[in-house]
Image (cartoon, rainbow, N blue to C red; front, side, top):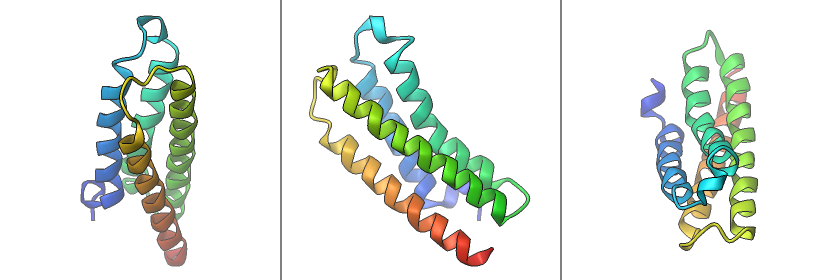
Length: 117
């Protein structure tokens, strides 16, 4: 099964789109700060899933899923920062829900891989 078939990859791609849309509303002064960092962290989730899936074995995949989980936590923190700075013009509940879904899928996938190692 390729990474494009994984629900966790698909849902993380949805999250990336949501983050890009939300962060496009941030002040221009944040273009090289919070906007860039938030986008990189969000993109890191599906890219690490993809890279891990293309590696030589389950141990490496397990490691890359762990990195994706770290990136999801980074996104969570950066979204909270954006919210606290009043950079989010719209309700961010859909983003928070999507992020929680991605995190649950990552945890489940990591546990599944661990049973196969």
